[in-house]
Each structure stands twice: as C-alpha cells, then as structure tokens.
Length: 150
View 1 (spheres, helix red, strand yellow):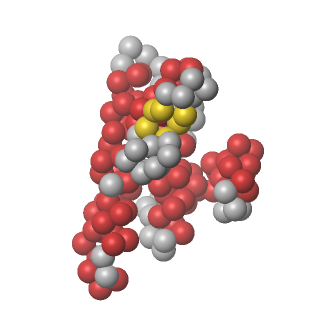
View 2 (view 1 turned 180 degrees about the vertical axis):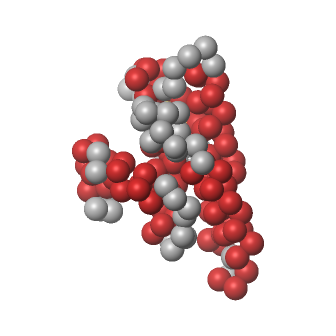
C-alpha cells in the first residue's frame, strides 16, 4: 500500500516518485524503452497491447477467483483458465507469441504459465517446452533466484 494505493502488484516507482501500476501499462512502458521486446510492424504496438490485455483479462484475472474457491468448486474456473491457455498455445508455432522474437508479452505469459504449472494445471503443448525454454534465460534464472523460486 505504500507504493500502490490499490495494494496490488505490480507497481513501478520512478526516481521522481511517480508510480506506474498494472501489468499492461508497465510492460508497454518497458517495450517503449526496449523496442527489441516489442513486436514490429505498423500494428506492432497495438498487437502488443491486444495480447497484454488478453493475458490480463482472460487468464490472469481468473486466478484470484480460482484460488478463492473451495477445491470442490474450482473445476469450472480451472477449465476456463486451461481453455484460454490453449488459445495462446496456438500462437506459439514459431517459438513466441509474435513469431521468433521474445517480447514483453512472452515474459507475462511465462509468469502466468509457470505459476499455473506450479498450481498443478496441465497446460496444452507447446506451453511445457515454452516454459522450460524461457526458464533457462539468464534473466529469468536471476529473477527466480532473487524471488526464492529457483
């Protein structure tokens, strides 16, 4: 609550004290500063926002509901989560969500899929291989280690 008045994560505090919140906004900000982490083309920025919004609203938002339900009532929400992971799995035919290049949307999908597998979800292929490949990236290894998840 000290940084983000909503009490949610993520929140990015700048040196001047300004705060940026919400995954979509933070990841778009990162992509603007590191264009190699954004899809290219005349619709690249908008395709990125489209995918980030999809991940946030169709997958990410279902986890708090799923986790708040008693185990015997989780199946319908769990099926929705797996269904939408199936949709994004179909986008990985060339390695990443936007083809052969890793983007901030892949970082978000990795976080969601990695967490889902640790909750016991059986995700459709090629998400298993995708998670394993991204998990081997040095920056991901460093982040998992820093968070005590490695």
